Amino acid sequence: MPLAFADKSLLAEKLHLDGATEPLEILRKGLALIDGPVALASSFSMEDIVIIDLLQSIDRPVRIFAIDTGRLNEETLEIAETIRLRYGIEIDWYFPDREAVEKLERKKGLFSFRESLENRHECCHIRKVEPLQRALKGLSGWITGQRREQAATRGELPPIEADQVNGDILKLNPLAFWSEQQVKDYIKEQRLPINRLHHMGYPSIGCAPCTRAVQPGEDPRAGRWWWESPEHKECGLHKR
Image 1 (cartoon, rainbow, N blue to C red):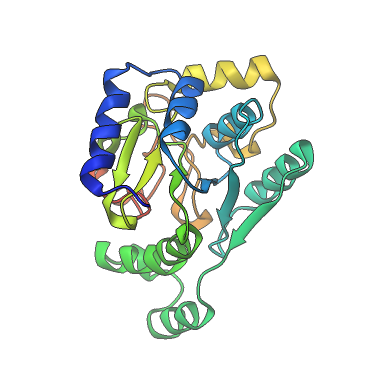
Image 2 (cartoon, one colour):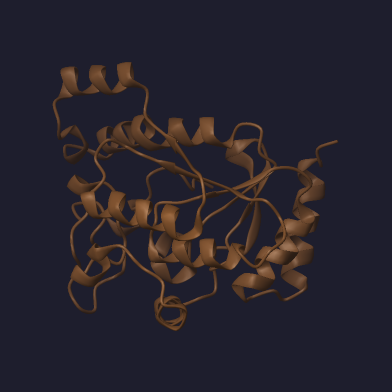
């Protein structure tokens, strides 16, 4: 029987009180709270690759899914295939609704998302949010690669939370407390492959038209939707 939202909140609070801060600990304790299928939402960022590697040491099946928005960089597709082959895993790809994309581009053109915040949210909803909603159907929990350090919108990110937007399923953020340097150190120690764009100044990678390299000292997500204010730099996948 699914847990009520209030019960999930108590479980999330318990995990906070347990003081879990390390990714593997958060994964193990978080997965122990979830009675049912769990999946990792992967964009094949450095963070997601670290989590995929960590999951290899956990005796719990976790499905991996990804969203192909139709505008991903070639480098992102390359690293996705590299990871699939390295770990011998199956990746469930989800795509936007064809008719919705065709209607949007026919009506507003190819770059409407740069004209207003409303238009950008519309594009993100069609290309990302709706496919995510389909991917999460039937799940009891999902895992993300979010970190507190990444953006102003994630400064209070908990290691585990009840996702009210997606049916109150539990959401694990195992890297919540890690810095970018800790992620890089783990990758170096484990000799993990990463997206080539990370070596070209892209700490955060989304759709090609909405992502650029950042300058030294800039916020890690400054290259995402760079024409918008920092407090708006989310696509709707992690709405709270």
